[in-house]
Amino acid sequence: MLVTTDGWDRNNLLLAKNDDKLRHVIGFLDLDKEIKLASKQEVTVKYCESGYADKRGITLPDGVDLKTIPQGTNKTLEQILLDLRIEVAIPNWEF
Image 1: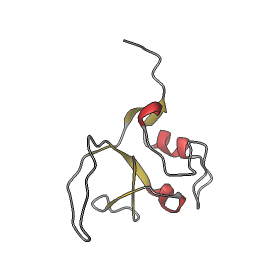
Image 2: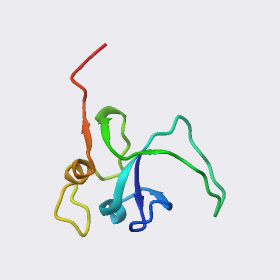
Image 3: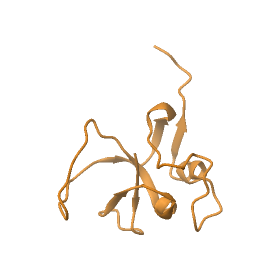
């Protein structure tokens, strides 16, 4: 799942649920299981800030794809991720 911030505060992560925060994408959160939080409850997580993400395993918000141009930018989501040094692709190797 894509994670964003309210601006530049990397201590306050949000899941990208729609286009309104995509310009603040900072990486991907990788969860093995669903986490349910009560209102105002906090949890510590780790997220990927650079590297490769398998296109087949990522979850994007409804109505968003890698060609979406987030509000307030002139770049596609894919270009924003590449600027962060995150390449989203289908690996060309098979085991």
